Length: 62
Image 1 (cartoon, rainbow, N blue to C red):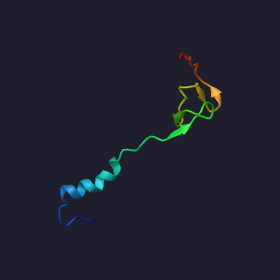
Image 2 (cartoon, rainbow, N blue to C red):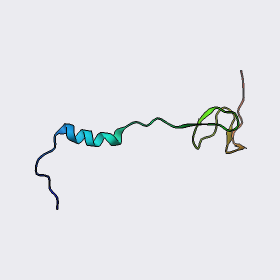
Image 3 (cartoon, rainbow, N blue to C red):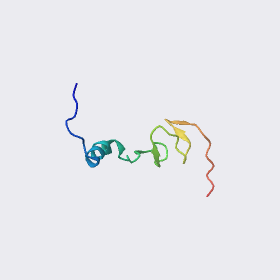
Image 4 (cartoon, helix red, strand yellow):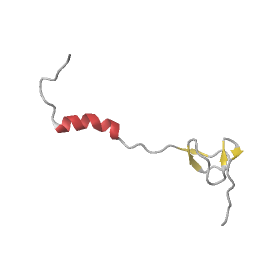
């Protein structure tokens, strides 16, 4: 069984672990119905459509 000969420093250990802690920016797609940016697999809050069908009623009060 492999056993380390020397202790790794904190900086070396944290450098290795930091690759898993990177913050990822959410990916936005365009709504095919209205063109607004929408998160993937979510209902468009501007028009209420998801995958070509209306899911929620949206009141447009401007």
